[in-house]
Length: 113
Image (cartoon, rainbow, N blue to C red; front, top):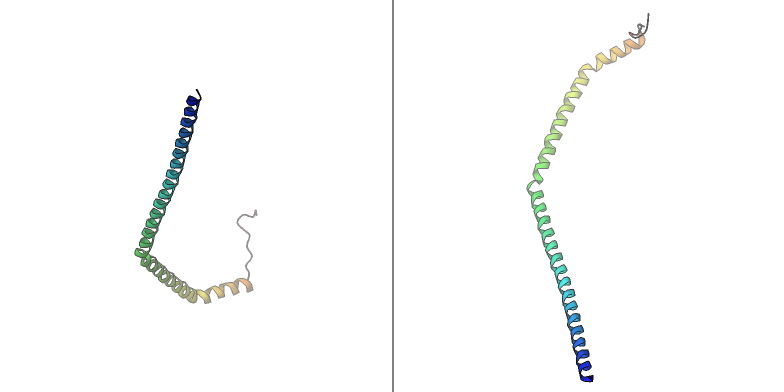
């Protein structure tokens, strides 16, 4: 009987070793899978960053062109405003001075008479 118990203990020990080896194998496979996944993620990220850089290079001049056109339009409008200011400055100053020197009091339209 002792031989049967010895055989069972030996078999149980071998089974425990097989289970431990299976756990180690599974752990190693998980680590490898994580590393592979991280590698794929890094590769995809690099690819997308390169695509973004290429897109920015292709459209780089477009923004500068739009900025130049906008600046030109703003300068054109400023020139128009300044010329209008120069033309009407004397008239406005005269109106303000006249209104200050010669007030003409009138009853407001909402005031009751």
